[in-house]
Image (cartoon, rainbow, N blue to C red):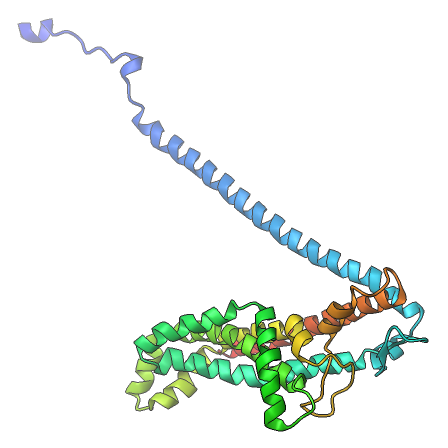
Length: 325
């Protein structure tokens, strides 16, 4: 052993304050981050659950309120007379509480407006997505979306002062406030919704679908009708559902341009009174907790059930197309 080796000082460990816990820092930091992530996920899930439960609770309270205020109707009129009666004279002596004319009016104006709005909205969406030059689509789509933001009272006023007199002159009819005019104005309201959502669904179809179809020799029209539209059919169906749902529950437009006559229409040019218009126009005049008051709430129950049945049927059709796709 040399002198330098014998005199070398032994290695002394560093003080505890100078040691760096390299092996324990990362796991501790990871576990802390994991706990924070878990807490954040729990808060987000709980918030979404609470919001969902509140929405369901509000819907349940609305249904309960309608039932409590509407079911007393059947203490002074039978269900058969209420649903199947064609006379609605709630202020006569004795009063008549038959809402068949209101039901037929609601159904007729919804179906007729859909016959106008669905083809128009879908074809406009196809034009914007597949045919229109980019410059045209850039200004046309915002203009259509702007129409969706118009208040219903403005559309109703336009229909009452402009469209109704035009219809009266063109068809030589006693009044322009009728089923046909109301359907046109409701279609005008529904087209922007149907067009916008359908156009988004068409644009979401991968470009490779179109390229493959054209590469196989299909024409642009065949590509649109047999490839693009079927691929976007689920989204288009959703757009149609939303557009028709707006037409079903619309109040102000039909109140202003439908004519306000509680009668079963025999032609397109007969005035009608759909259920929403009848409720809106008469609720302010009905004595509180009187027969007329309860009958209007029973009409609201009927409208509510009518809307639910329509949405369930439309959703089942949409789901069927989605499964096929």
